[in-house]
Image 1 (cartoon, rainbow, N blue to C red):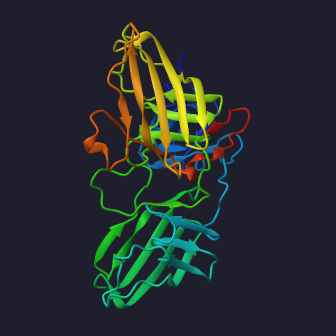
Image 2: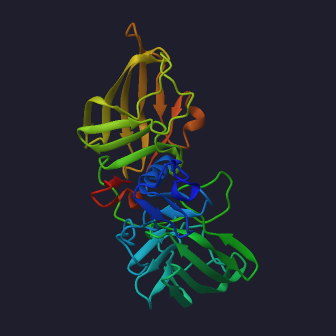
Image 3: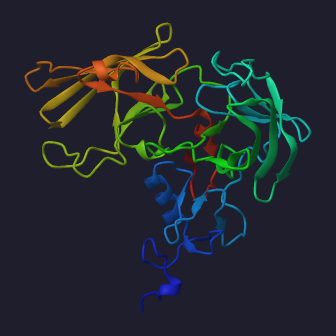
Length: 359
């Protein structure tokens, strides 16, 4: 007799295997949930398959032990800072201690001016602030005299991710009327009005240990769609794990989940990677792709180089050009790649009987 609806996982439609519980009181096979998170593209989390509530490896509880599947390496905002695009000192939030929380404008652009044309202070303290660890929510107020963009008061509510990698909810209310939300920073929507903040960690010093996805900003849904993974000098590959179903080799098969680079080299002085990808069966008549990638000084982007395809006769086709967002309109066959934020590259330790996942 098969499992009843109450006894089977709604993802695999089979009897539960090592079940886990979610905060929204749903039950799934643990492996099903880990696979579900990988399909979502971020590895560490995704929406509940039943109710779409955000979940992660940190919020799942193993039924057998009652313990969380994983614990984050950071468990509080204090001692941390959070930045938006542009970096530290550009309206970054600093939580040095429970008593010392402020916004930093130390590197603010020259055109950021208060209404009397003065510069904002290097440190602007939060007033009457509070921290609720149970909900990971910070609240505080900033007052401006002279005003800033016509506003005299900003009221903050920030809700932090369960691993403290980012601010995922809450809002800033200017003069008790104009509300700007905080939004999930790793999957921004086109045209979305919101604030996107990540926790600061030391910047990368190499391409190795990095993942580069297509687009001007990181989106976890873009991982596995021809993303470049530089695990180590001898482990570099293109991921097609989430490739669209219409991406087919010339024999009709899907590209492999991992396609390794061969004949690789890396020049640290010029930050230039070279590698080759061979196709058999061909892909759109291509049997070989030759790559030259030049990385930006901060390793955040691939801002130069090319990918040259070759047909079966060995003849090159017009190359694709790696470029910056500013150059993209002037490049006939552009490739635009950006690096996965360093804070999202931590290793999450899953118990050995389940297997580790790296994100």
